[in-house]
Length: 282
Image: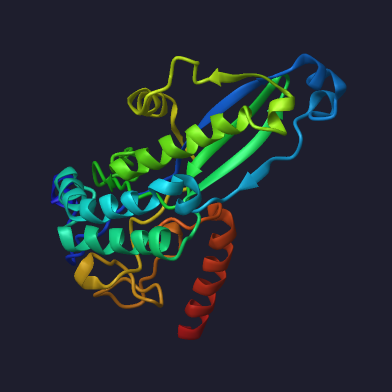
């Protein structure tokens, strides 16, 4: 249907192309630093921020005593969320969405993989803590608008459209603010509520703050996913496009779920693997 609307002749049927688009939306929770702490230069080298301190907590660490209830709630939401995503154009069908969601659920809630990346930085008078979901559930789509390569496509990542992504964001952001009032950070923090403001206290207010301030990390992928053909996959384990001969995709599009690392690292490995596969067939 997308190709027909763009007046592009369709040669094979692969409904997963352009679906399952993901990215990592992030935002920053921050505190103001005491003047004497900033002026001392101990925490900011007088002008430049210290090197980022990065943490990768898992779901048990983020949700604490609420982990089991959150896991049960998430498990019960997978199919309803899959249906919503299909209706929004993010997946070809419910089976494809359910396949992706089941794998992300397994990584986060069974295997205890990192659920969020938390980065601590200092700037003049400010402790800034950007956060990113490590393995977001939210998915969007990429669509061609014409047969011309010079016309912009439609790109809709549907950030934070899966409710659990927002719930995780709220829980981790609350813990970040709590850390500002906990030693040793409390020793250098002047105000723990630089952003968001002190009047942001309820979950609904936190959600509004996150929805208004989040922005993409440009860690795109997933739209030509290496998945079984029956659930919307586009390439096989050798990066070959299903139903074609000699056609491969060697980029971030083949990675079906986000990886808990910046895309550059694994794309180097993917490029090397792809090159070796091409040479084997030469």
